[in-house]
Length: 442
Image (cartoon, rainbow, N blue to C red; front, top):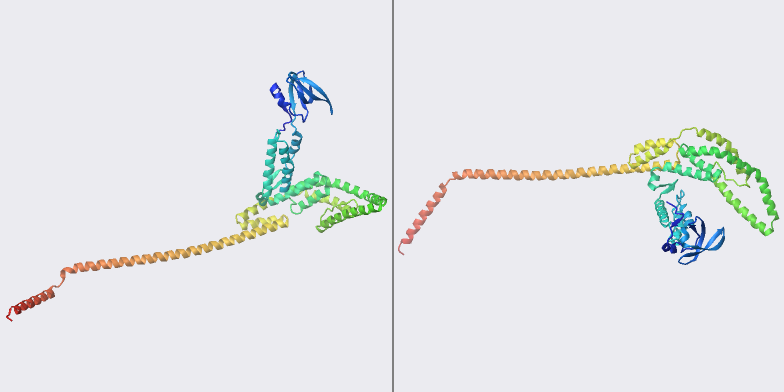
């Protein structure tokens, strides 16, 4: 993204009106004789310019120059300073929330675009806006930006162990950069409780060896100044009028109450490094007491090799997704030996049980489908058998009918006609007799 610091305009009589129309900022006039000065145009004629010229810082004089003597005007964009602030927004900070992005867009980006519609930086600001919106969308969907990289919700789920270690290490470095030694050492404590053999933890331990002597010096100064600071506060309070003294005491009491609450939380969580207060001696002494043992311990820890527990986590996660619960259990056993955060190992155990239940349901469903398929096969076989029986019976009947017909045809030529002939003879004799009777006189 290029920062346009100046706009160079070679003047002609036609372009001169445009180049000198704005007087919001002083332009730089470069003359043909090699001289240059800052000025704004008051008025002009066809051949001359009447200027308010800067002769020194915040000192001006009126000056008239001929247009033909001007070689060049360097015009400054009035939005330049505002853009310089906008340009610093990227890259965005780590662990920003969706609301953080919304605040930046509404309080910085949109006002710039409204205020400077003709700015030479407008397209650059629009690109910044697009980047912010893209990151905001990723955060809204469960993603996180850390150390310049956007991790999607799926990325975090598949590599949660490494992501958590990176996040804790980022917080350590953030406190370290601000010289917040106790907060940095507390962040190291979190790293050592679950991520103790990661590369991030080793790097933090090595940095801690450098800051522990500095923190010791700081605590010693606090301890040394505590009596005089307490006496001074008492003296100042005693010199105050009664009403003001009452209000100030209440303020001190509120501050002490808030500090005591922080101290109680730290003690409840069994934190190694207690929050300090310049008026509370005991936490300062306790932190001082453990510095040298910590230096010895951390020196020993830094000599140990790192363990890629993140790789085991990814393997377990992949096995769960593929329903390979036996492989997931095997790697989980090794994963737990490296003492990861209990919440993370409990989460994996739950996911394995859910995968086993899914596998069991899949097996049961497969069995049910197999039984149903067998039942359907039996029904189909029965139908086929019945059809075959019907076809066989019909075939047998057809054969029987054909055989019977053939037998009839064979025996047809051997039929006994004697009885028929006898019957015809009897009928002939009877008819003949009847004819004779009819011929007798009546």
